[in-house]
Length: 373
Image 1 (tube, helix red, strand yellow):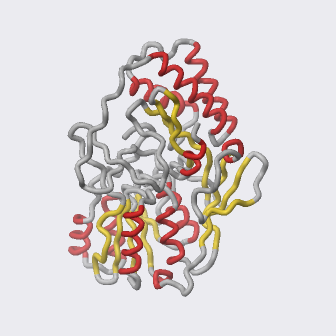
Image 2 (cartoon, rainbow, N blue to C red):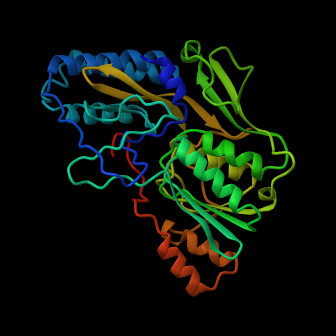
């Protein structure tokens, strides 16, 4: 497995490679190759090996691997004649053993290994609409109230440049609303632009424990804000640290609201957990997806791939949000989250309703199951 690829994909979302960054037309995906039963079985066997070596929890990894090998030996996948059906069945089998918000197998033509921080390739299947850009509707939406919606933290240069411009231009806003209701995850780059501005003292905002057997060959840490620290022998531990800007940014005094839904996942939950643990922002909406194990996609041969979680994140003194999500401070339906934030900031109800409607995400706000687009 390409360990260097997976290491670079720390906190990558379980999301299709089809992440649009603009509205430009995109080429259709190539047709999937004809089903090859031998290649499919070999991919499942490789997945069992990779899980056993690298999945975040060694005991669970052994259970996953044993179940796949037992079913393979018994001919349990012999009646399948389609790659997508196989990947769906394998994913369901793994999730039945131990649920995980990221773990999934993908068929040829599905998500492939991709380094966070490299541009995503726009892809389109048939007449399906392209996914929304990483960052949307950024600007001042009411006097003193800045707003930005993220659909993912992909660390792409254009998005980072746009976010930097937003933070520079809106510095001095009394309120910042970050909309993560359709945020599917990603990396730390966007957070590392934001944190030095909004925090006023150095601190560790997240602990990330990676399985040591994976970390040994994974190469350098993928983000500069991560610092390696001592850990038990079976773990490689890093801390996500914040060094505030000097001189202090105007954002350090800004009130922050963070909008969530059951779709808010992975890196978006990392941010939610930081906000909740530090009390730096008020979370409004519904409990997040519960995808707290980071990792990356790994090739399995024959065009198959899988997202394999290799580590877990948790706020210092707390626990992972895997399978439980991050609870909001103010519970409302996701559709009413922006309205609630605006009302709390003194925006008249009619104006708050209009702004809520004009800034309603176009994408779904329901929890996506592992392996589903």
